[in-house]
Amino acid sequence: MNGIHDLGGMHGLGPVVPEQDEPVFHEKWEGRAFALFASTFVFAGYTVDEFRHAIEKIPPAHYLESSYYEHWLFAFEEALMKRGFVTREELDARIAQLKSGGP
Amino acid sequence: MPKPHQGPAESDPAIRVRALEAILTEKGLIDPKALDALVDTYESKVGPRNGAKVVARAWVDPAYKQRLLSDATAAIKEFGFSGLQGEDMVVVENTPDVHNLVVCTLCSCYPWPTLGLPPVWYKSAPYRARAVSDPRGVLKEFGTELPETVEVRTWDTTAELRYLVLPERPPGTDDMTEDQLAELVTRDSMIGVTKAKAP
Image (cartoon, rainbow over all chains, first blue to last red):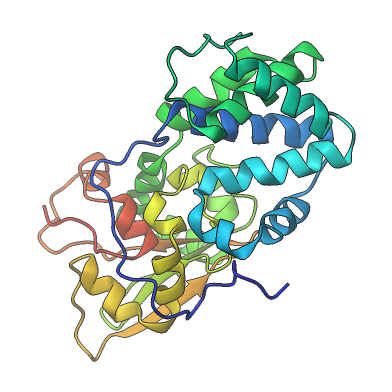
């Protein structure tokens, strides 16, 4: 698939900015997202190809603006919903519940 | 159960992850303790110290180096480093004439068993864009200046095949032990953006 993820050779993206003593995960949720991927990957039975294809379907502007683990989150949410392990409604309801201070 | 978050500052992805983890846990599909173990493994157990052991062995043991260059997956497995995102490995050797650099232009493929999870810059748009079009410029940003006579080879990793650079053994290290040599092998030198450290 030809898309925004195919960045090789693209101009205008600026210098590479390495971070000194970079932590493995910058925020706690990144570690949870990583572990969720590794866990759901097994029981949901999706492949790396499907996972990457889902990332490649992220709208281009959002792809460039969002962080790496947000890409992952987008991709495994897709894979889990496609297989019915979780529905959009369920997830939205739980997010609303958490935002209002619930468990 | 993850600890309830206090305060209004929790980001959107953080809430989404927490919601998803809660739902999947309640359905019995995942075990939060298994998630804890995975985070701990990649935060503290799997990382570039693994790759450094492989490189140091190759520097002191010519027979091992030969095995590493001819069948990297098997040679790396001799240390017990194998599995997820390291199933098919190729090691490329730096020499006085050739310098190798690894990128994943499409995403973030990286040899987890030997290097751990990739740093943010490796996954960033600028690195993925320019490692293939301006590798010498990228190397300069990492402080690596190579003579024009040195050929630079950029390897674009795929999901199926992961590369590890075998950096040159630094001069003045003849008397060092394998363990001491491993200390000179940095993550960046195994991606190819720098050389190994001087003793």
